[in-house]
Image (cartoon, rainbow over the protein chains, first blue to last red):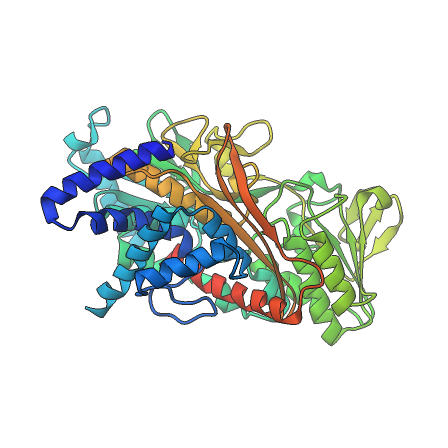
Length: 109
Length: 423
């Protein structure tokens, strides 16, 4: 499956979810974000365990995206993050931000 | 009777009741079945992600003989005294209790791909709809003349974690004062490309403290190696005069090892070792060949979009056993490949959304406490193989602050990836 196929699937998903829930974009983004997040959780813990690698759950989505962009433009220097973000589009960053924001909400309940 | 045995009996019961193999999944009485062979970084990650993502819609069985899995990554830090042995061991309890994975602690001895059944050492058969094979490596012992499985007791390869690594540590620490440690790294391709050189660093670290006049001789069958400039610089900085790396163009290659006299013979000279580690050439874990999944190289060709075997669409091969082209054979790579595979397997069995494959790897190495380096890349499916898109590597002459950050980051990564693999 190429990227354009995936976009088509995403759009289709949004249309279905619009009818079902009234909160389409976030639900669709979170599903894609969960898939993308599997790359992040190789290093970042999501269960509250503190390590030298920061907790990225529950962030404000704008801050989350701003930090990813700063790695992509190499303003931030960590080479692993520069490399990971080189493969993320704006849409990918938004999906990841929504997904990781949703984790803290789930844990806080 | 163990829990896994009980679960296995239940599984067999379900399989006898379900004889509708030719029908679509929806017509079956039971959930579709995924069987995973090998509970390392690739296999355990795949089992966890399929069970977690399908929320019970897929019946996942993991076949792994060990009840406690000791990671190869960070085993060098145990050799160097920077981690204790228990801290690199992981069990499978959470995969069973939190995700409902059936864990069978037995060897898989064969695969009947026509009947879609895995044959266990006990003779029992475990049916599957999709099979994931992640057996790691086996050795070509005769690649080093005089070496053998038996010889590994005297000159441990220690290239599968566990008792071999403990044995090597004990032998290094028992060396006479001013003695010689000889390391014979493997030829390409092999598990963990920077691993032999991190091992040399960690053994040098131990010797520097306990036996500072000891020497390390490296008889390498290669002319160059991963992170070479970084390791060479680090050895000179931390262990000046201790490590002598000799490529095959100078040594002429290892002609024989004698574990009784502890002599390693090369064209250049015969080296008398007080302790030694010999790591032979490698191939995919034996079950991969038994299942007919390997080619002439001894490794398993795959389709890079899904990690499916090139030999069989119902079988996926992960990690060291696979031919993942530019991706190194590492625990990180296997974990990354497992997530692509899990997404594809769930899509094939339950119709869940399948997203494009994306792969990543980073290999951290410790040269000395507080001095860490790393190399990494992103990858995507290319023309019939996995191809890199973006790469990085630590630089020589980096500040102590950057090296300390990298070193500490590697410990964070270990915590993260082992939670991601084992739950």
